[in-house]
Image (cartoon, rainbow, N blue to C red; front, side):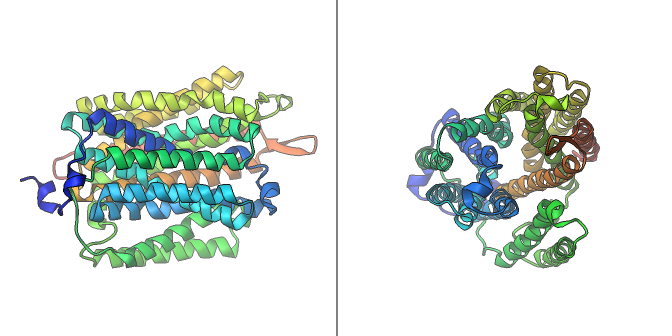
Length: 476
């Protein structure tokens, strides 16, 4: 029998008998991906009001955003490993339960600590996306796997793009708690669909869970990402930030030594060090960095007052609507990416996507005179992201054993998260230091926006260079 059968454990008849049509499985997992990624933009419309709503300082309120990022980074690789060991459907369902629980907690309270706890639970659900990709590989016919994985991977960007105007409309017309009740309902709907239509994968890797590896990775990631996300607030040269970076480096080194000595490590570093996997993950960091440049800067540019000489004075809802087509473009191009990868290889697709991202930011530099020009630049960037994100799972899947697909995809998603969080810190620093005065307010300057676009463009160039280094031999 196949490697999948050799490595699998017994699955109950009820689980193995649940075999929906490929279209229904893709639609269900695609919806899960969109809903999970919605959590990234859910609270963006209420960021300015969070200190008042929660009765705290702006610095403390920022943890409502940071906690989601940190939880997602920590739990994504852990969810992937648990999925490989105990069943991907089970862990996917658990992720959705965490999303529901977090949404209910956030909806039920109006103080800082419960909101941070709830948002952390929502962030933990991000691991559902790489799990969905792995389920598709296990369950779908070979001819449907490429396009299905591309669609699932693209949901990382689609949910965020669509969620911004929807969340803004809810926040503008209803109590802010409705945002979280809505996400709880969506999470419950996804959980029901997963329970009904997603079969449990027979591909398993029975082993003890690597608790030491999980704790070490969690500490290292938390130290790294807190330093990245809080560097601008606390001061990049402050003792706190430098200590966090030092702790992260030391723990990562110790964690790597520990993982290499484990029979069933949380992350198989020997597989992760294969050139094809390594360079794909490094390119993923660069693409994630470039993506977040659009998410952070374009809405600010559209909402900047017209008195600045470059802004358009749009409301959050209208700015979100102007950028909503980016999500549709990502989704539309994901099957195109799959077909291109099948015909020419995923390496070429990733290089093409990264190149298109760079072209989009070049257009943003040259075209800043009207809303439609900003929309055009955003659509081009989104098209590149759609091509690039959809190609990454194909590169990873072709280089790892079938028994480690969820963990490998989880690690790749983590690399994208590190890219987006680093981008958030860098772009925020640039926009905060390159400003103009408008009355009593300091606003990012035109040169500040241009600088962020050039930085994002540079990240896209780095992604192209890293992708060019990916070997595509059969042994890689």
